[in-house]
Image (cartoon, rainbow, N blue to C red; front, side):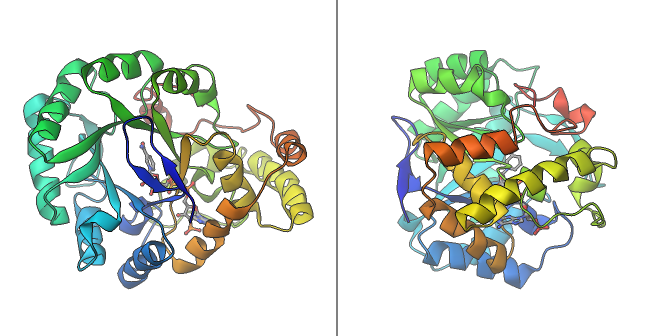
Length: 331
Ligand SMILES: NC(=O)c1ccc[n+]([C@@H]2O[C@H](COP(=O)([O-])OP(=O)(O)OC[C@H]3O[C@@H](n4cnc5c(N)ncnc54)[C@H](OP(=O)(O)O)[C@@H]3O)[C@@H](O)[C@H]2O)c1
């Protein structure tokens, strides 16, 4: 497994990271034993970056990872943890809390659930509009100084917020959606990251499975599967978006790889400062994703891919409208 370094101050991690969100029901029911086997398979093949959030099924995801990581050398992997999203007992999302006292509270619970004495990259999942970013990341800086956190990360914020946070404490990486279907990051955010020496961990590189080659117009999201609320998967949009996948499939066939591998490799090819996260929740999906990092895309391949899926080609927002307002950039 190749490695990449997150920004000028962040850790060196595997060039492909594993996102664990789907192991806690974000895409419908997940099999616990298979999820744990998937984490083990990832670690055994050299994946060293694992991403979670304390709000992924209200702590369930952290407890699952604690079980999967038990007995592993703590220095052999890096944990990226998001915090701050508030939820209710009906699983509904009800805002973001970035107050310094809340940061420390969230951190104390995460450390306990994860069974660790430190988190490698700690990041607010979204900006709390009621709290200046300097205060939120100032609390993380304190926790870095106290040894509970190793690096500051950010998630889904705009270029100005990145600059403000970085002035308080160097930011290792920004986590943000980046894929062939979601390229808003390229306008202001990516140049700002590069100017400041901050890495990017890209999520949604398969657009939640939409551009994986495994989705079809006839496939419906089951109970609890967030894709059932996604504009890009909705009737009227999904047919258009799947036509883009078919165009991509022709490029993949010519290259001798799968659509998912091509989509992941395209993100990885956008810069050595970018680490794609894949949301595999089964060993089968993981085994498909990993070889993407061995694909060598030529300038001609990249042009063919972008001809198949030009910027802005996707139909539908990347989040339901209620969630779009909390993002630093659009689609
Ligand atoms: N910072 C943020 O705001 C934020 C937001 C969302 C996610 N994240 C993080 O990023 C991670 C990845 O994001 P994501 O899960 O939304 O995006 P993704 O990797 O684009 O989508 C994952 C889904 O794609 C499908 N898939 C099909 N083929 C696959 C393959 N070969 N490998 C992997 N998945 C395949 C799987 O669904 P099926 O199993 O149904 O086929 C899987 O659940 C999350 O786990 C989470 O840690 C961060």
